[in-house]
Length: 255
Figure 1 (spheres, one colour):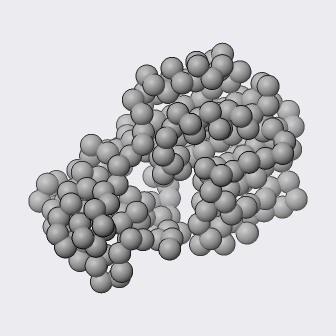
Figure 2: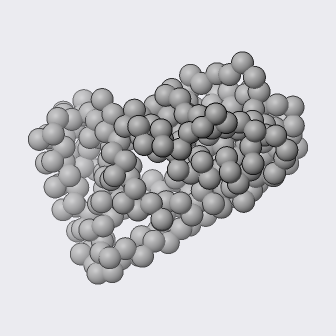
């Protein structure tokens, strides 16, 4: 069962959009591009990607039916959306750009993943990827701590969310090994002024906590959320306003 809620996710739409624009700025414009946007979500940013690049064809891929229902408003004959898993995505024709904004941190084994993404590219193709890497922030460490508590540990069958994100230098090495002649790999910290520290709970309800929500019934998740809120506020304080820092990895490569 998917726990993705477009309305919850888009509560902080403006804050979530800046990394997309920073990633898009790394992409080189080329004529008549064929583009894949992996983890396209509700489609607004895929439409912007398509228009900005003046792409010949763009396909957005996402595994959330609720997210894709929103994307139907943005498609046309040159921009389309399909339901599918990133891990299983294949194409009978190569892409000039494989783009992914805030999605690949849900996919395991990044060594194998980057090999697969590279196999989708044309001979002079580009890859552009942005991934959250905020696992050491209290917003994330608190979720892991609560998941290890009872009764949640039993309800989750021992599951604790672990990020597959690699150290930065490994992405640089991986791109080199895969034959990318040029690359850009960096960590960037985004600062988000929020009305209060309680808004951090609302932020992660639309992203990180969906991984726990889909594994529990409604009552168990409500209790999980209450405990998470209690522990998080004990760690960061009940502060008004609150400056929420969020680390993200931005990666670009071209043959």
